Image (cartoon, rainbow, N blue to C red; front, side, top):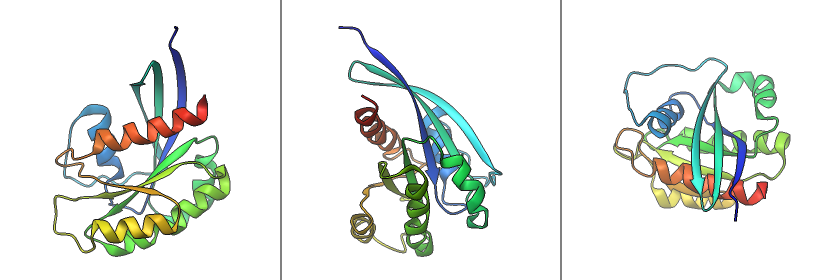
Length: 170
């Protein structure tokens, strides 16, 4: 049986400074730098992953976190097969804003898979994983706890969304 190869666009959504760029850097290059670097526009990174007998080139679009740029965001979302929506466990408002991020994303791409990531789990939390799960359930999203710093669940997050995106691509 021959293996299939897919090129899949994945967006990372969420407010500024929640750790989107750090998650991408941990996933693609296995590095972490705690210096904050604001993303402007979008940065695209690629990583090939194998799921079963299929290979996916994940084109990861790290979208700028300023909600004032929503018209620009809509252009970046076009053609995406899914998203990871990231919040910061130390800032509850970043969780609440995911409802808008996910709603805007789905208004452009339709009912594509989105997984919520509660990032910075290595720091003192201002809200619990159970609260994030309840919130995720209310907007139709699965949830994972991550830390770009320690690497906790970073590979698992991308593997999980990768499997869901592959199911949709077949």
